[in-house]
Image 1 (spheres, rainbow, N blue to C red):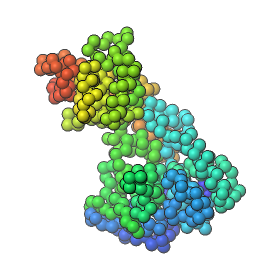
Image 2 (spheres, rainbow, N blue to C red):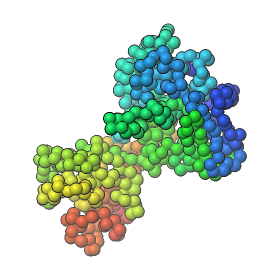
Image 3 (spheres, rainbow, N blue to C red):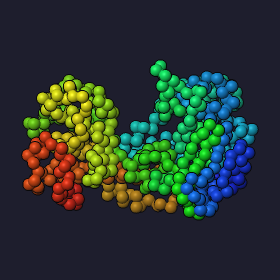
Image 4 (cartoon, rainbow, N blue to C red):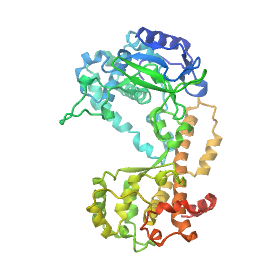
Length: 496
């Protein structure tokens, strides 16, 4: 582990020393706020309002010079190559160096209030990760890739600096690199670039790639907890300061929240080490595009209508259609399905429009595909029976990735103690169950929606037109008609 001191969320002395250091660095902190211990609520430290705060009030202002960043570290003079690294990697090495300075380091008081352990997925054991089986988030952890990069890129540079490696092993460095990378992922900010140092491409345009922006740790700003619905503050960048401003009226005693954006709970636990009911509205299920392709080629031995043209295509013909979808920037490695199935006010019922457009291209009759090849724009995203049937096949198969049912997960969640935050294994198991439950609910809602618009409604509603039944119309119009109850639909879907 890295060399900074044992951290205690309830250590008031460390908090006071941190705030004293921050003031000494030139920060301006409003007397209307307080940095408070919120461990009883499972949130570590947090910032709360001491009095009523009006909208647009400045909460605090941190000098750019106080940000823990590559630009502000003396390591640049010791290892000049650091400026050539990816911004994230350079900050990992800078943080290891600055932390290794101990009490002599400029950011020592800041390191003292940072957590030593975060429940991000890269720190979970293999058994703990098995609880997430079925979720696509497992493929995003990337520990092996990180190990390779740290060993091949950062470790050789670190060995050029005696302060970092003297008396320390390669294993220590690798552990410290993961620890600092975790802190950056959970607490770091993208910083605005110096206008005189921005990258310009061959055509003279400035790059706005998020991955290329400088990264930094902004003291105090990173101690605001996040809430997608309650966020009431925003960090603004200027040439000399980073300033946190209240975006709405905040009552005395209320916590001040930042916002991570619309992240699903799977990404919340992967990046920040926790889950929250406030973020489950953004849960998604990822469908690998290869599974869409497979579903479009299944025909032998199955009861398929002869007008399902794409199901009779050769591999070469299907690849030609995928190429066309790629030319319109529709075809991706995976597609997201989110909440919204069954909600008539939600366009495309939570399905990615690009997925529906791609399905249109993949399943179009050959004559129509020839027309699409010469079209000036991509087809509109619609539902027709062929699309629906392919999606039902894919989602039914996707549901089988999970080893438990919704009912079993709900029972497991009920059995786990919610108040025992000190039990790491139980805490992580609860998070895993919530992630997979959120994804399963999306799959079930999507299947019910598809079943209603394809199977139930055409057979129970006389007003369905022949064109719609044959898949020639915008089939999503049918959702305005009567459907069977959710309970009955669920039983029908579960028989598939």
